[in-house]
Length: 371
Image 1 (tube, one colour):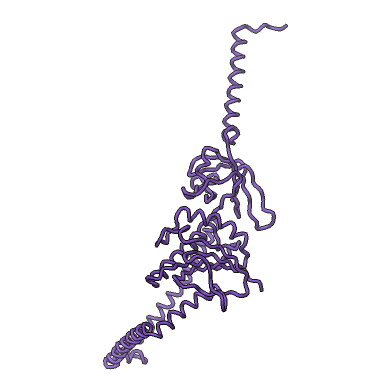
Image 2 (cartoon, rainbow, N blue to C red):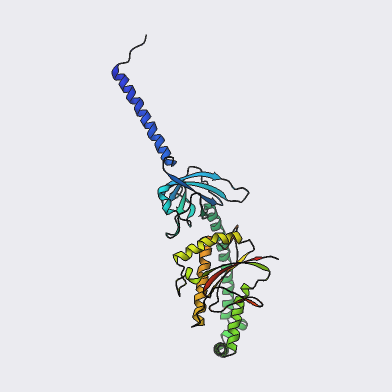
């Protein structure tokens, strides 16, 4: 026989059902927020040699801010290749992620969950595009640190053992010398021999000093001064003469990269090199080498012109290596990148050919062997 439910009990049951539905909805919303399902987002990619246990759903942070999740993990196409991570990031933080941003794998606490930490990049760089790729930094594993520490301890033990043996041998020699035994013992006890050795040492040092002063004077005497200067110049000039290699040249006026008389890249100069870096990587081959040359037409002081152009070439080389890894050939290999300042001199690139272009310029020359 069925019993009728009273109104009070029915109302209580209805409220309980509504509470359960509300709790379920709140939980669903929290899960969606954790997975960035409701917020407006954008996606970028990051490539790693090893992802150290990162999985889909792991957190992404920008300057420590909880910014998104790992959306996709794509294995490498071949052994030793790069693992691709697809990252979904809150659109409100897009202005913080620039084209020169870097991604690294970090651990929360001493032993905690893995997260992807994004280092935003330089404030004057442009924001990364949808689907763009962020350069990654290799994570140093604890196993590697332990291995390196073990090797260091083995080396330290070997050095300690060698030092102990050397000390024992030295004590034996010192005891022999103290007793006046052997040639060295006799020499130590002979005051006249000691005075002669000290005198010879003093005369030798004086002779070397005079020789160095005379050589410096000769270098400043015409025509010998031209010989020494031209020899150093031709050693630098030879880097631009590579007849067995194909040349690809990119050139910019000095003022598009530097302020007048300065060797620090301007913000627009860095953007110019950022735009050129992709083209360089498309041309570069594993055996390619790079020469960065800087020139000026200032003839007032050749020595100062030489110093200025050398520092400008060094600045361009440092930026392309630090920001765009132009020296990398993959798998930890490096390529030769030379930076040369030619001052106000125009070097030859062949027996009867000299470099041409604006008198104040920086050139990036890529040599790719053809034989």
